[in-house]
Length: 215
Image 1 (tube, rainbow, N blue to C red):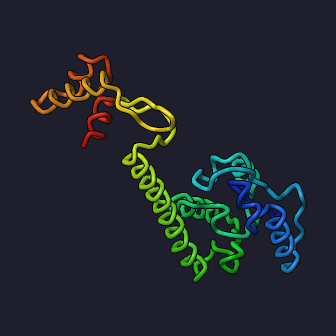
Image 2 (cartoon, rainbow, N blue to C red):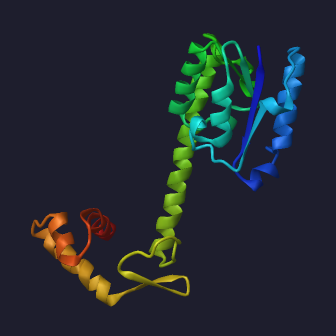
């Protein structure tokens, strides 16, 4: 049996708020010691600056971990959210590991979650909660951006058609606003997005996005 560790931080801020990689590595080694397991430094996979929204198998170190793990091995991680943020990713990975007789120890859940007991139930619930919390965070970010846009502030990214950016503010571009009104009028009389786009040199998706912004 080989014991493998996995830890991750997505930002420098996390490292300063108790989620540092050094702390996670020490916790993994400490847990292994209490179980009488030996874990080599090279067997701890350290993910630096990678968002939890990226599936484990798509992360650099996550890929390496899943590539080397073998039957009857055990993976140890300090917390559920270090490995997963998506319930679907968590449960799919769990099923693959179970099929390969690989143990997955979530220290914050009290042990191996590949069994059929309470740990798996808690793991399933917390995975769903983590995903819901991420969805709420995305919605809060969208709300902030909508509020800033309503105040005429520029949110960053690509310039929105119909506006110029002047001193950090969105200022109407009269020529482009005229085009938007003309697009809206054509849509109101039943023209398709494709036909409108062909007239104004835009693709159908862009036309729809522009008109959706108008409400």
